[in-house]
Image 1 (cartoon, helix red, strand yellow):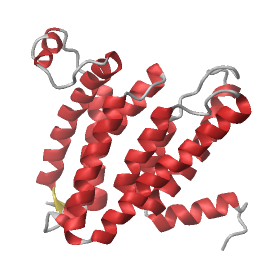
Image 2 (spheres, one colour; image 1 turned 180 degrees about the vertical axis):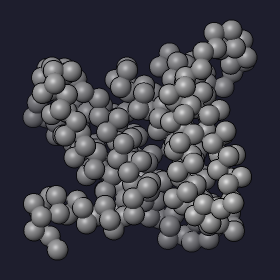
Image 3 (cartoon, one colour; image 1 turned 60 degrees about the horizontal axis):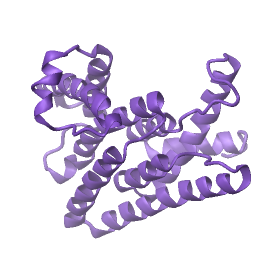
Image 4 (cartoon, one colour; image 1 turned 90 degrees about the horizontal axis):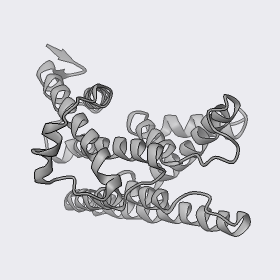
Length: 249
């Protein structure tokens, strides 16, 4: 049986994998904010002793994995499947960044560094078939860092405090390696749009106070997932209509 030209067996495999990875994300979310190693013997000792399934993360990761396979499909060659593979690997790191930043207002350096390291590996692999793709990914990294660094520095200059944390700057630079120049600009715009809408909602509902810090990392993560699923041209068209108040054709 096939769905979107992908055998149901692949969906079952990634669904089970997503459940396991989701639980590992829960483990990472407990360890990384404490600056403890994620991969250690503790996972067999401490976590085994205190094991408690995080069904929300497990089901969410599984659902993302299945929908990524449905959206991107399974191709015949490794190179053709690179987008799917890199998104499957990136997903748990994004979920971890979302949860940790939301709870602790920090994106751990170890997490950002891991995203960077994996991104460089993919940039190298892409370069084996097309150097232009690797160059675009490196430009995406520079653009991600540059845009958010400028915003952070200008915010500090005008308001006397950081407009956003340097963890966000590092995260955007790392994501540039996965999405390239054009897409990282799109992710930036979407993240600010989502951030503005949700922040206003949080303030209106009094979930957050006007003087209370609202972490920006979760908005970046949501925008990144949008970019994974929605084609670039579709997002571009929607954003142009929004920012031109519907005057763009």
